[in-house]
Amino acid sequence: MAQVSSDAIGKRHAGTEGGPIRRNPAGNVARPMVQRLPEPQDVAQCLEVGLFDTPPFFSNSTDSFRNTVEGYSDPSGRYDPAVRSLHNLAHLFLNGTGGQTHLSPNDPIFVLLHTFTDAVFDEWLRRYNSDISTFPLENAPIGHNRHYNMVPFWPPVTNDEMFVTAPENLGYSYEVEWPSRTLSVSEIITIAVVAALILVALIFGVTTWIVRARRNKDELQQPLLAEQYQRYAEEYEKLPNPNQSMV
Image (cartoon, rainbow, N blue to C red; front, side, top):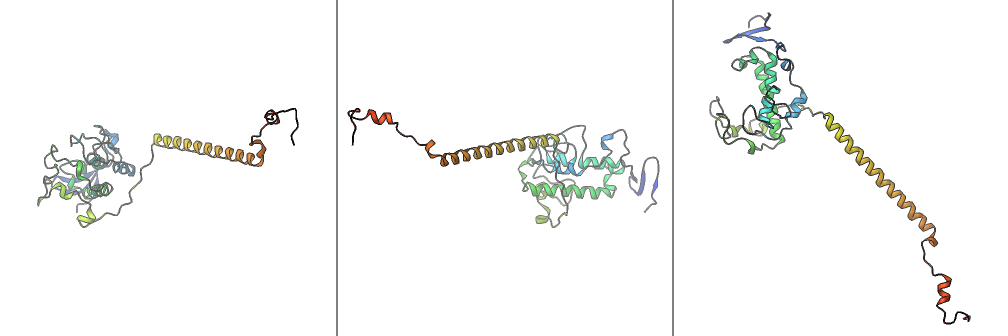
């Protein structure tokens, strides 16, 4: 392996047919948004995108897990032409061999990145029960329809054959501790408001029950207040001759 050295471009590593492997992490000052790596919360958000793919089944699809994990959409699934996230962001962060589509497989980091991307895909399949109903049957790019052979792999294998969880079907598994998504400010406010309303309702209910219980207790202790009795004048008026006494 060639000796590692530094130059103005970045770090140069073992040579390939495309020249020495170059890396200059976060060195693309012209694009500040690619001067960082994807964060665990990005992965957590991506795993919440429930549809595998949506029209037009391309790099401008929105609410598409495929497009989100690939990195053309915001981690939440919203398409934004200015965004590069997850898989794409990791490539661009390297800012060298790994950031060029036709050369990136020459960088050994390529294997690690795509292995983790496959792990994310496998976790998504587990969470959504390998639902292939949103995998496009037609109108996707060449080699990307559901029953088409994956390109450029040989021997041929179709996309739907690979749309399965790894441990049960492919003989391997990943050991990953998946991050949980942190709540946004709006979600925290919504939860706080709902919790406050529930608390007020509980306090009102308990207070009403206590007042009614005390009222019932007072009525039991003073039965005369609750009974209705005829007045003496009413009994007197019912007598045949009120001026005569009766024995």
